[in-house]
Structures are given as structure tokens and as C-alpha cells.
Length: 288
Image (cartoon, rainbow, N blue to C red; front, side):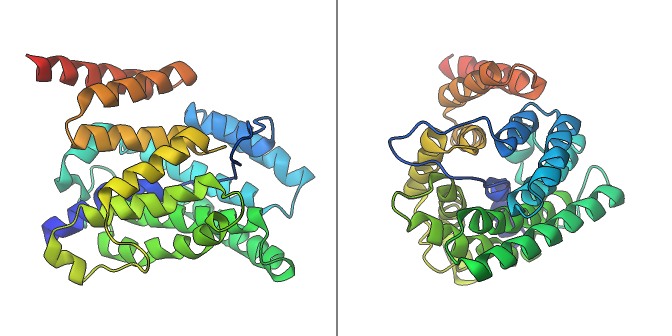
């Protein structure tokens, strides 16, 4: 069962930071505060992202997405500090074993992260009580569930606890995908779980079950590609996840292309440049 736990956790990062909508046939606006905050996050400028969110909270204090993205920023600060975002981390399943860690979570960051999650959930609940189809509130629920899942799995290394948290994002995600047109970023939550469950040994599926998730790896990858192409806020992160999938499946040229594109889109992010070089070297070795 330990091996199964490692596989479950290996791609749980896929459910973090799921954010706002992108509509089919439209080029989404990318000038709002959430857009700017996530641009800073993808550039690994975490103080800059938090400053954008602080300003947004003053002008729009009832927007639950502000608190959700703040929690996600704290998550990424920890993932970066602990070097969990390096793709090599996801190549070794032993890194996911419960209780093993190369560094200790920062308790102050944890406190701020969960305070932000609490705020996001309260604001989302208030908005949904007035309008059950409020897209920002539904996305705040997706983000909150994803952020807590990933913090639990990747930072605290509580793998089995994270498997119970993961389905919390599915209900709001499905409501968003049922809208016409769908909010493509929500495919991230569904597609990630499809791929994860599809990667599990058959007998483990008796113990891990998510309603509506069949474990079709191909469908999961296709759904991640939808986010990569159409997601307003989450397209870059979907491309990171597709690069991880490509590396795990030894499709090194695909991983190189994805990481090189990200390094060009976010030139401040040194990690993307390093990962592009690593993927390129793997692709060269595979051709020899």
C-alpha cells in the first residue's frame, strides 16, 4: 500500500490554484488583479503577488477569489522553498511517502495559508447563498479544496488524508463545467484526478473511489490540454503539469517544448529555464 500512496500523491499538485473562467471563442482579459497576482506567482515573485492581492482586498473585500489566490501563493512559497516544484521531485515516488521530508513546513506560513482558506470559504458561502451559480464563489471553492489537498499531500506528506480532501473540488468544478460555455479552468480538477486514478494499480482502485472519475488517463490528459489551451488563469500551470506527465511517460521532447514555452512566457522564473534545459538533455540522451 505504501507504493500506491506514492502514486496517488505524485500528481496531486494538479489540483492547486484552480482559478477563473475562460469562455470558448473569446480571448480572455488578462488585466484584472487576479490575473496580475497569478502572473507574479508564475514568475515566482511571491511578495509582488501578495501586494497585488492586498490592494485587491481593499477595493473588493467580498471577492473570495482574492483570499483563495492568497492561500495558493503561500502554498507555492512553501513548494518553492522546499524544492518540491522541481520536476525531478515527481520522478521519484519515494519523495511522496508519508512522513518523509527534506525540510520542515514553516508554521507561520501554514497559519497564514489556512487563515486565507477560511476567509475564502466564508466569503464563497455567503455569495453562493445569494446566488448558487456565482462563478467566482464556485472557483474559490475549487481553489480552496485544491490548495488544502496539495499542502496536505506535498508539504505535510499526509498522503492518505489528502485523498479524502481531493473530491471536495469536484462538486463546484462540475457546476462550472455544466455552464454554457464551460469554464475551462475547472477541467483541471477533473482531469488531474482522472490521470491520478488511472495511474493506480488495479487493486488500489478498490480503496480509492471518486464519483464520476473512471481512471481514464487519456481523458485526463485531454482535459488538461483543454485548460492549457483555453484556461484564463490556469493555462500556464496546466502546461507545467503536462510537462510532468510527459517526463513520467518518457516523452522528453514534449516536456522540453512545454518548459521552453513557459520559460519564454515567464522569463523571470529561473526554475522554468532549468527544467527546460533538463528536459532537453533527457531528450538528447533518449535519441542516442
